[in-house]
Amino acid sequence: MLALMQSVFHFGFLKKQVGVLGLDNWQFFLLVLSTICIAGAGYLINDVFDRNIDAVNKPQRVVIGNGISEAMAYNIYVGMNCVGVGIGFYLSNLIEKPGFSAIFIVIAATLYLYASSFKKSLIIGNLVVAIILAVSVLIVGVFDLLPLINPQSQGALGVLFKILIDYAVFAFLINLIREIVKDFEDKEGDLDYSVKSLPIVFGERISKIVVSVLLVLAIGLLMWYNFNYLFENDLFIAVIYVFALILAPLIYTLIRLWGASQKTDYAHLSLILKLIILFGILSILVVSFNIESVKNIG
Image (tube, rainbow, N blue to C red; front, side):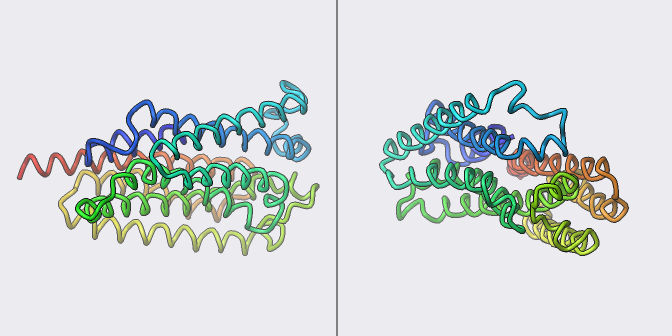
């Protein structure tokens, strides 16, 4: 998902709008590889810390202690982070922005803290995961656009970066909702190991109200964005796409949330939200195509 997301924004959007970017194709491949390595390392260390909880919540998917020993997992974790941060350091110096290497170090450290402590804290773990996904969108703009900025190009590139920010906000909001929904799904195991998730601390009713408010906020923002930026610019293909594959599933999620009570119900909603994130990412391709078709007609 991360690799697809970054590739879509690089090749399907920014490259079409700008042409020559801060990273060429092989350098961008390294950026994706760095992202995957750091994210994969975070996923792995999370499995190490969560193996007891996972044995209750999803016993069929427990890998640590079965397919991979804990010692091997730590070695792989260190290796993947070294590769990811090392590539980040190389790319940051390549575009003459060595300070950008701190982004990779901070993300790697944050993922470790998430697995070791943040995840058990009320809402903090949910926010951390949502923020990191949003940063994964913005980092494409940071490396592709910022090296190109000068007084002449600042306005045009600023518009493109603002679009990336809009998508990052969308990714943050939907992923935050999904993380809370997953807390409903994992409630049984979390209870056994003193995890302070929203459903455990405040109960299911209040937690569903919180998720509903976030869903209504997401629906409202998307409807506003759809009308003001897509419909007003005659991007009708993109308007239909957003309504059919993003807004409609969000409304469906809001309705189904209040009837959910079993683990399978929340797993279903989590999958729907994951698909919404996917279709949200792919929407930039539809928007780009629609812009070109409108230009050709004009």
